[in-house]
Image 1 (tube, rainbow, N blue to C red):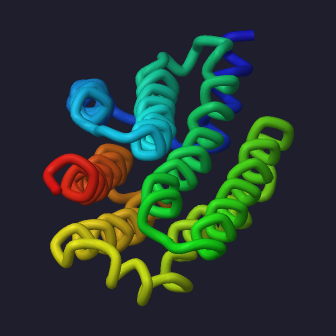
Image 2: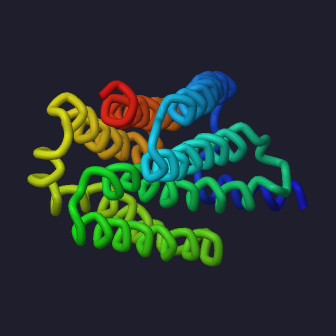
Image 3: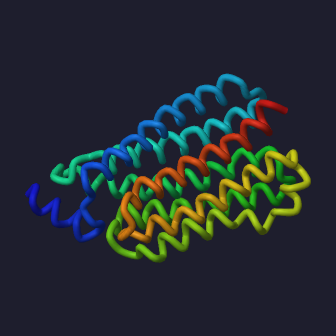
Amino acid sequence: MNHAVERTVEQIHRLYSRNENVADGIVHVAGIVFAINASLWLLWHVTGLSVLVSVAVYCVGLLAMIGCSAAYNLMPHHRSSKMVLRRLDHAAIFIMIAATYTPFAVNRLAEPTGTIILAIVWCCATFGVVMKLVFPRRFEMLSLALYLGMGWVIVTVIKPLSMSLASVDFWLLMAGGIVYSAGVIFYVWERIPYHKAIWHAFVLAATALQFSSIWGEFVRS
């Protein structure tokens, strides 16, 4: 059974060297520390019911993405739970994308625009989660396209969002999207050494940028 799991993992991604796994582990430990502290900091400092609830949704998405990624990527290949964690890891990305939109859509976009954006991203996230949980090794390119498409739904509301956010917070949000998208290059470029650690470093950097945007809008302001 364990050998079968190893073969399955190897069919999906190449096996990584010890140094590559150590590097990826360091990135994930940093991510876990960041996610926990960032979530506690936000929830402690935000005020107002709509802000608190929407930021709590963001924090759940953040912790789910970082936690599931760490559990999957740091789990030894021979463990039978590895493939289950892969499903959760990829599904959590959809939740994180939709969760990042939530504070801005609820508190910074006028109606009905905010509700429409929420409906679009959460419907896409639900579809993506079901797809990843039910068909974990199929539709990989569709999943990647859906990740990117959801991330850039923001361009449809870029004008009202830029007018409602502080300039620095708007550009932090956009910079995060750009860094996420640039990191995809390293996600698919598996032949490059340390590609997994580099990809996750891009994710962590992008997450920090967008956290800074949320912090600036709903705490600092």
